[in-house]
Length: 298
Image (cartoon, rainbow, N blue to C red; front, top):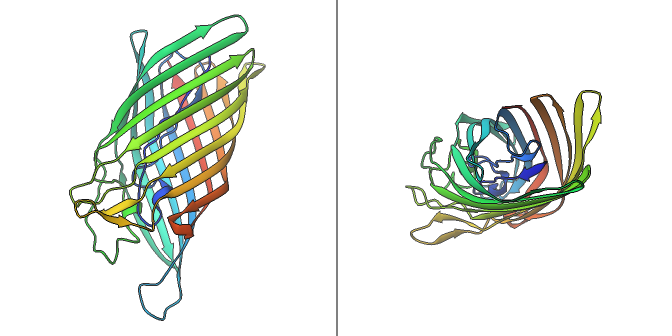
């Protein structure tokens, strides 16, 4: 039985949508629904921005943000009805402002999710599955306080957010013979960190169509679909309700990718291109997202 589950956490100021400090966790399409796995994953996001200069009379700042997440991730079943997912990320983020490069790296925010298997029906031609659950993102990554002047540039490239965040998700897969469709949705509820900075709550949802076929000893699963991301505004100071008007918005991506499996080993490549977007008041432009991963089923 094939099943899909997607887990997402959210983050940041000027380029809030980038994921960066909080990162975005994708489990994706996986075979052997009741098997455990452990793997390595890399996520890459590329954004550009055009922000007014902090100095009067100076031209706008041209910004390019690139975010890399390298993480250990996995799933472990507890009994017949529960699955625990865990993510341990390492962040390597950089920002280029008019040729001046800033890099920030380190262990990111560890997160986990507990899902319950609500439906797992397997028939001769039609299969379906439904899971739902909740989890937390822990403030394990480095996050330091910064001045108001720097606030527009740095929160999102730090390895962590400094906040405890909560996630909910639901995922449904319907499969007929070798073809199938998956619909998933997740919502991240953020809290303010000790510096009173609060990243916006976010919604992440998607639809993916897939087809599996065998080529000698390989199992190949191409897939294509769309993903929609929406984030509320950040707060520069949540206790004083100072809303960050330059954050928040939506992104709609067209997605395509493929997975390959050989016995207990698997690999995946997913590519995302924006087809519609409005973020940070229109100052932020998503260029692309990519994800690669390898894993071992046991």
